[in-house]
Image (tube, rainbow, N blue to C red; front, side, top):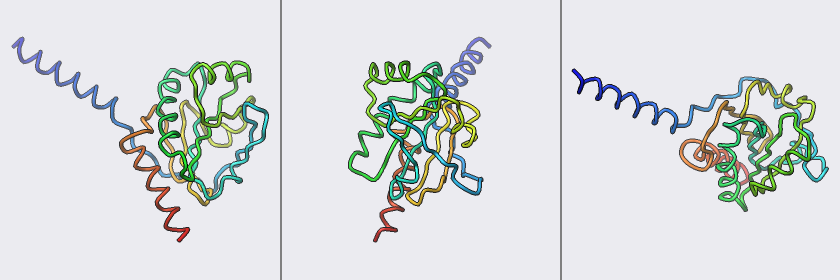
Length: 175
């Protein structure tokens, strides 16, 4: 009997590890239009999502106090580096924190993707980001196609594949 319980416990532990390691499925965007996104970056420059037409854009809402956000950000950096030279952008939208706090965090971690500030959470409200991290994939035509809640490994597996599919779609459209 004791062996059976050990086997059951080992199987449950393995299933839990696999569930955490696998990305949750991305959901199709069901809203009619892409919400506006016009925010300032850490240098004080205004960034408008509309100016990125022709690029696939990953919009990620995050905060420095959010454990899953912090765990996910190195994968965003790897994705940003891997797709350097491609028409691809990462916009990491900070949820309501001060510029000095966010600047210090980004500098310490060495992230090089674009970080935007949403001090009053108006962008998060418009995008219906009700939890963190919340991520949206925007196609080259500027339409949100997919969204995901929770930590993902954007640098491999299904998440990377989804981004690459949107890039391939954009490439076919340019021909």
